[in-house]
Amino acid sequence: MKVRFVGSGDAFGSGGRFQTCIHLESSATQTLVDCGASSLIAMRRFGVDPPAIDTVILSHLHGDHFGGVPFLILDGQFTRRTRPLVVVGPPGVEARVREAMEVLFPGSSTVPRRFDVRFAELADRLTLELASISVTPFGVVHASGAPPFALRIACDGKIVAYSGDTEWTDSLIDAARGADLFIAEALFFDKAVKYHLDLATLLGHRSELECRRLIVTHMSEDMLRRRDALEVETAEDGKVVVV
Image 1 (cartoon, rainbow, N blue to C red):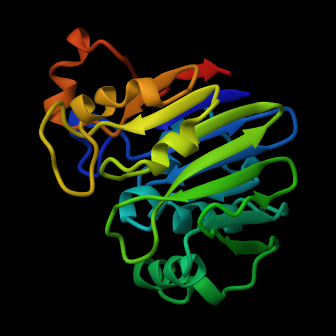
Image 2 (image 1 turned 30 degrees about the vertical axis):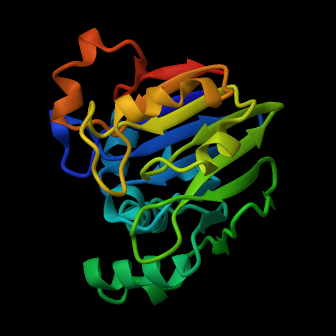
Image 3 (image 1 turned 30 degrees about the horizontal axis):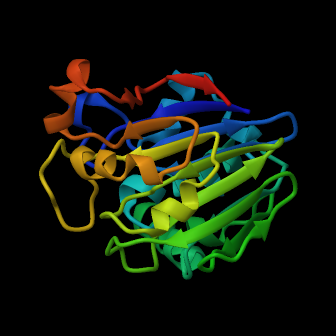
């Protein structure tokens, strides 16, 4: 499975980075894990074809993680997309996406389209089987108006886990266990902030994270100015890894 960091930035574009968007490409399907507001621009910059996306899986409902979904849907409408799009996320995901569409482009949520947009809700530790992938959510700690999740995604015999945004919680141990790749937020270097991970805390639990590879993302300026000295692999916009 090919993993592309379409966007690796925080909510505020620190370092000129795009907001969170991770592209998973397997032999049978293409998936976005989170889709921040800048994601459509980033997809086009890095050669990800929007109409080829089958599924969007959202960790939580903050704009820098789901705000690109309305644009992805509208892009499909204007490019005459026909393949269905499945949007998976926390409880209430359909209402939040439709509300966002109405705020941004009034009337857009009810316009007839050539393709179906289907929604599915995540529930803590219940595996959701999709056409070619499965996703297991793990409840984490991040106030966002709906339950937030870390995600464990299985496809083509590989497992990619993702923390979403969260302060440290032992749920991350379960999400990362045995994963080929664990993508974890590290907003700050050693500054503890409610609802977010810092690198020092994350690495303090590294031995408990039984993953084969760890990459940190969602970095603020505090992390970016230190990245050349960090003893951990970091995400970059456009970076591709194969698991």
